[in-house]
Amino acid sequence: MNMFGAIVCGRTVRLQSFEQVGEAQFVTTIHDADSISHIVVFLTGTIPFPQGMGGLVYFSWPEPCASPTWQLLGHLAEDKPSAIFKISSLKKAPLGSDDVGTNMNTFGGQLFSHKAQIGISVEPILQVQQQSAFITSQTTSNFMQFCQKMLENLLNYAASFGVTQAQMIPNPNETFIPLSVLHSWYNNFERKLQQNPNFWRRLT
Image (cartoon, rainbow, N blue to C red; front, top):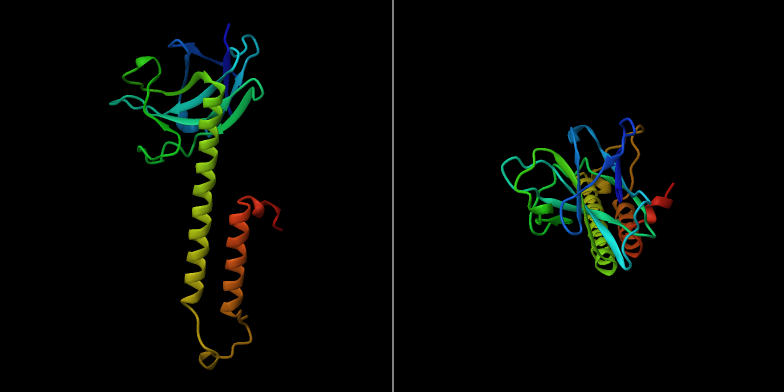
């Protein structure tokens, strides 16, 4: 009986079963991973987690000349029996000791892998929740940095075209907006972003 299962989104539904490769580690292989964007990982319901335990979900792209590099995606638990993960952006992400979700440990002592893999490590639920929360917080932090850089770029770009009122050439087909309006919008947007990184979802 399999404790875990996985489905590759966008393909004919076929249950990916996991092989136990360690005392508390499970792995399944994903063929032709370049053509997929999302995967669903779930508890099959046949075997529950041991009391006080949960599962950290990892993903690795093929590393034909090196040990697999496992990137932490999230977690499963009795109160979170399934999850969907986007993997299409992971392959091109630079890997290093400071990267979000990077884990250099291999499952089952594997040295090489020529196919993408999903790994699940069963660990104490507190540790599982803490590591998963760290991933979420780091992702939010990266998103905020991106937004702030984008806002600064827009402001600097618009300011590079700034002219004084005396330098303006009348043009009935052109609409002019004071640069102070853009500055005010930038400050308001940045303040709201710091208060709630997801406030933009309510914008219309």
